[in-house]
Image 1 (tube, rainbow, N blue to C red):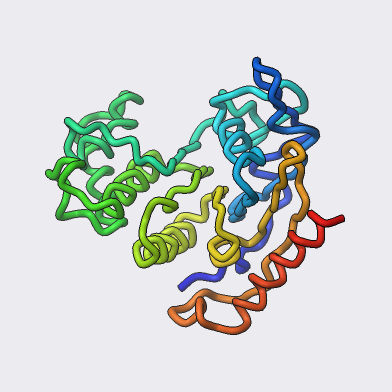
Image 2 (spheres, rainbow, N blue to C red):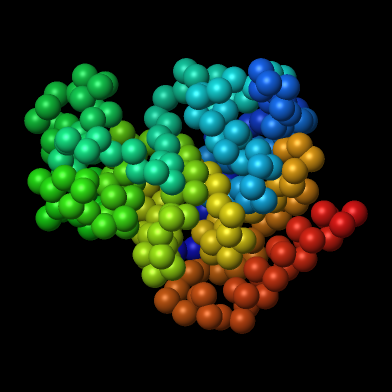
Length: 260
């Protein structure tokens, strides 16, 4: 298994938020004065209660929405014009009439990549997530875990430098969720891409990430930003008392900050 704390941090950030605020047209304030940055190749987990603005942050990083105040950069650019960014959501959003291979090919097709090259790259991406034998199947013929693997392959096929994940495994059972967490760590280690994952689970956040940011409804208040001081993840990590101690440490930080 991989070690989320093993990478050296380069000088320039892969993404940066400075005093970011987001007020929707109906007057709801989702974010206010949010600031943080993440270095190239880092793995960041963003967690907190429902409605605290986690998904808003991810959508802003993806360039899907524009904040009403502050500044966001991705690789030094405005998120709307940033290249090599891919997203995965809790709903895999597969086109039901396209096969697994055709779904993975879609972003390359839209980008005008040669079909033969696109098919080859898509098959390679499916192989990396363990779906080489499912290329000709339709989404309705897949389990929930397989649909999510297809969505991850579709994200990887564009060879992203930044991967944004919004509760990608939240609807899965515990076994599938843990398997895909392990798969995500392996892919991150192989590609050295920058990853931001939104999750409601502190255990998942601590297991995956180098850093955990905890938000609270305030709105969009950042109540904790902590490094994860745990070594390489192995098959026994989840039952290791040191891992559970680290989860407990992050929980205590969250509770003490909320109470203050």
